[in-house]
Length: 77
Image (cartoon, rainbow, N blue to C red; front, top):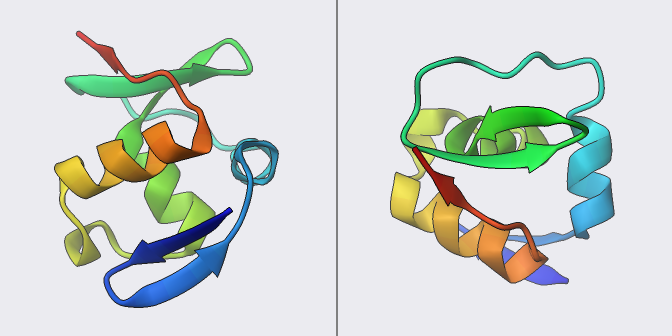
């Protein structure tokens, strides 16, 4: 799936994003997260790792939109 993040175009899938989280521990204490591989990952952490972006490069709403388009279920704490 083609996605645009801060003017850059990425072509990825949900499975590829999940693979990029392998070996990464989720950060604690966030409001929005996705559950994958039995762990709760903050949505900004997921987008940052998946697209090699600094978290300052995008806002939470953008991460939410991207992950929803990829098929992730966003959970609110």
